[in-house]
Amino acid sequence: FTGGSKMADKKAIKGVIYLIAVTSILLTILIAGNNTLLPLLAVYIGMLIVSAFIINSKDFKGNVIGLRRDNLGKSIAYAFGVAIVFYIIAKATGLSISLPFLPNSIGTQTRFFTILILAPIIETIFFQISVFAVLLTMTSRRLLSIILTSIIFSFSHLAAYISGLYDYPSVVTGLQAISSNAGSFLAAFLFSFVAMIILVQKKITNNWFTITLHFLLNLIVAVILSIIIIS
Image (cartoon, rainbow, N blue to C red; front, side, top):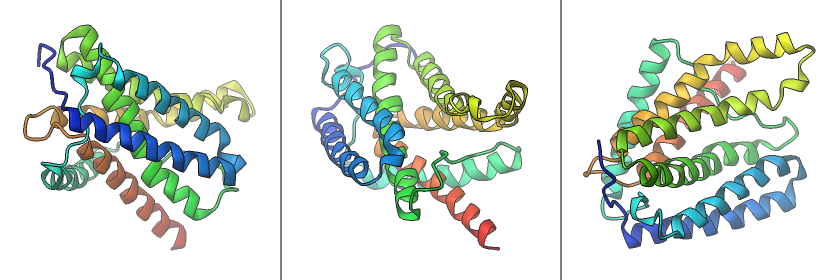
């Protein structure tokens, strides 16, 4: 896991650029139709803009793991297997896999579209593709870059709770709420770490694997929560 090998593929990088363009259009449409989601979607757009600069930069392009089509089936199959195993182990060990918080005022369809489609795509583009490429270029150590990327990924989820700290009646109550979700932060780190350890293997090196894995875990949690609510 040492050394920054050149994993980039021109077609795979183009796939990421195309996905950024399509996702940006979808975000624009959502913003026009739902002002409630404006803060979240603005953050997402910012993440895509930063990612576009990184992916197109000659300094980082050589370490970008893009979106390949030649092993798409294998990558998706791996994602299904890893998602099931990861969820079972997480539940057995008491780790909490949570979903992004969204305002109750938005529609059910928009909520699920954001959680199941936008979040996996944009977070993968920003963290597992862009942030990882920058860190690998800077450190030339793949394992270290995976760990650092996973820490940043985990702290980004922690920030979602901290940003709402003012909504709690007291700082103590807010800190208790944050600490009670420590399992979610650890689960986010482990998700990113496990996903990227598999991602960098020669038989994968395709971030469709990461996007699919993220989608499947969110889908499993969303379905289970929906069943619990209905029952």
